Every structure is written in C-alpha cells, then in structure tokens.
Length: 154
Image (cartoon, rainbow, N blue to C red; front, side, top):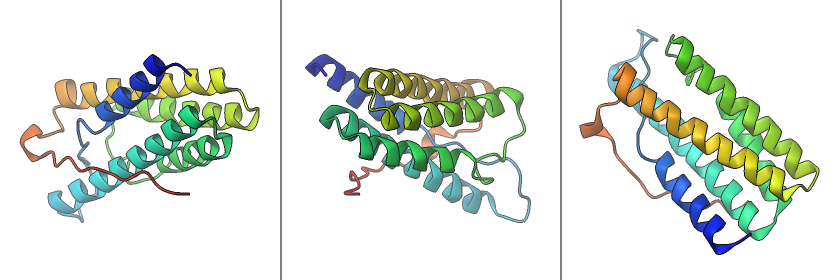
C-alpha cells in the first residue's frame, strides 16, 4: 500500500469523528442519555475503523476481520437504528453490507478488495453524517465532543 493510500485512509478515519448522530426515539430516555448512547456507538465505530485501517496498512488480515466483524455488530445495534428515516436506514444497511464484505475480503486475504470495501464504507459514513447534519438536522454542531480514540491492541 502506497504512502498516498495510507494517508487517504488516515484522513478518511478523521472524517468519521466529524459528527455524532443523536437518537430521535426511545421516549423513556432523556435527550442527554440518548446522545451519550449515540456518541458511544460512534466512538465504537471509530475504534473499529482504526483497527481496520491499521490492519490494512500492516497487511494484518486478522485485525481487518476483527474490526469489520465488530463494525457489523454495531450496525445491527438497536440503539443505532432509532431514527425512522428511509435514507438514514439505507446508510445503516449499506455500512453493514460493507462491513460483511470487508470481513469476507479479509478471510480471502484480498488486500485490494478489503481496501476498496473499506473506502466504500468510509464514503457511506461520510454521506450519512452529511445527511444527518444537513438534511435531518439531528446533529447539534455546538455539542459535538470530539475525542481521541486509541487504537485497540487486539
């Protein structure tokens, strides 16, 4: 993988922390609890993304597979599926499909396929964040709390 590709991957990961999606349902929880829950899911997705990126640049297919599998699990978390919008639901489904494809590419030790799948998943994340921010207006930019997430060792 070239230095340009590595920087592209690292830059794309940075975009993932650009916003936090706020839940719109579950009336039994306060808005702050919903936001904390959404934030935790976003940070978990970011940690998976970092694991995948590290696996791609080091050609560690086990790490790519773990990150992709964890990302797929997060995609089916009911807490993340709390906004009833068809475009938002499409982004969730697309990210899950890309995570599954990425795990398959890692199993097949297909670095080019894994890289392509990962770039597609990053594009899906960015499009979803843009949609949530600009169309649904469910992200309050003044309340976004960016945090540095260490790369998991496992």
